[in-house]
Length: 187
Ligand SMILES: [Fe+2]
Image (cartoon, rainbow, N blue to C red; front, side, top):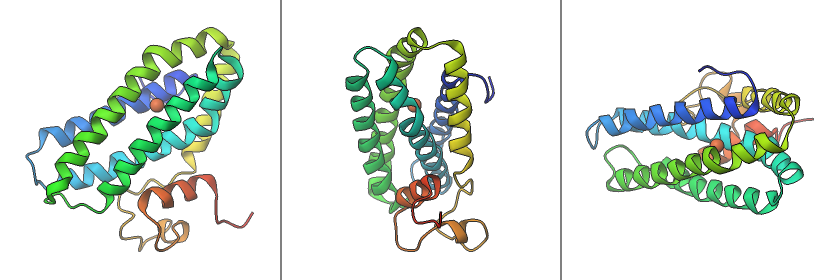
């Protein structure tokens, strides 16, 4: 399944891609340099995914799904926990003693987020919304993700477009979020 279709198909495809990168991290031995590259890549995917969900998915859940506020609040809490782990992970090299602990925490946090969304939130949203509304949300989510940077190495933002998009000093997650939401840009 590729990207496209309604919001649920789109976000499920993201989930599978994230799981694929987790699998690559798990397949490499502890301390292997590529594990850091994959951790950066999965952070970028997750920030992009989370920002798109927070911008479009959860507001729709609040509006259309009975009990949607509580559902959305829970998912946003999950995101905040994952984001903190990703911030901590940003400062760790592959050989850092905390790297394995933090990637393990991130995987378990995200896997439970995915299971919860796919098993609970998505079915309820599908029930509450028309197919057309789900398609429109899919387009919005794709659009939101397109504005995210795609380069996997924001730590060395020496080539465009990252050097234009990233404010100096902020952490990776903040920088990606700012780049996606347009915060700090002239508007
Ligand atoms: Fe998700």
